[in-house]
Image (cartoon, rainbow, N blue to C red; front, side):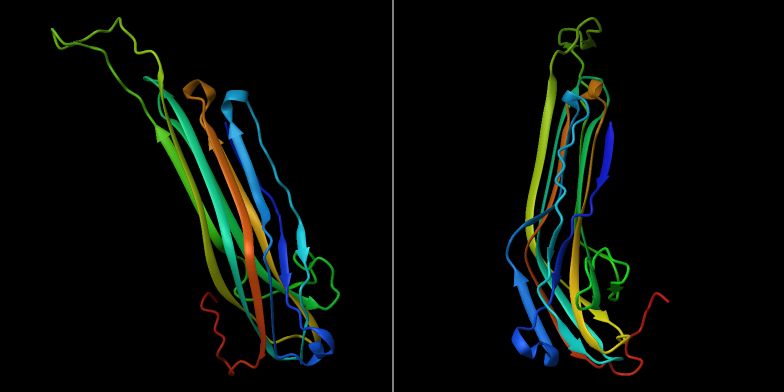
Length: 248
């Protein structure tokens, strides 16, 4: 039994320059301290097919900055990523490998658009800052157990074929990590003068799978959340030919 689920739970962060000074700002920054759940899935094959799903859409429009045509934005995004993966497997004697897999991924991209553009993270009018979408934090956890035991007659050292071992072996592994990460983005050669909203788009990606019920009563859970996060932006002028795309 396997389920690979993907949600687009987006926490959008943009920059804010306060008051009447917004139009002349060369640097801006702001932050959010709440926690947004991006993915939450659980699968338990003792009850057939079961998925707990948290589908959260949160938009925090925190800022605006003005820049002339042809300039660049240097954008830094920091965030505290919380990923929880839990796997539990029950293996029966000579029933083969019993396995549970849990994977949690946090994705990040930065987009920018003229001030007032709605839903920049999902709106095609939002321009993508280089280097584009990336994995901000991720973990894949696999737990597999095999039980292969024989009953031995200690007086003859022979296997007692007519005897069976009753029972099973259960093993569980849970990991809960919280870590701060940072990545830099660049909005290259702004297409027009004016005010821009710069938005950090976080999304969660969860995947859980277990073996069939006859091999074991297994559970897998994947949870992804973004907590404290900050975006900083600077209006800059890049040195000519200094921005090089190594891929192309």
